[in-house]
Image 1 (spheres, helix red, strand yellow):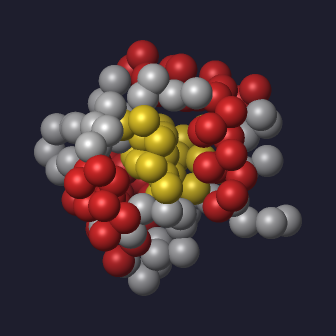
Image 2: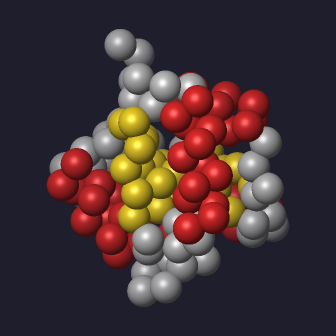
Length: 122
């Protein structure tokens, strides 16, 4: 079981992702925007972060960069989960340090493949 931080400003999306992750035995942490996501990542050091892109305050690309470039959180894999499906968005996400990129609506099998690929082996 891993501790996974969901960063998304949509309560519906957060609930949907939480249900999938709990079904697979994971513990959930949540944040409602990129700024809070960075704070929670620093404070809680989750095993993995699922990051939306379009959010108030700081967007998911900015938050991903802050998490992946900070020495205290750089070991935490970030997977972008967004409706933005352009190749340029995927490239930009990778440049910010994201390990993977999953588009909404999320297919449970694809999401779990991405997550399992980057969870620390215990």
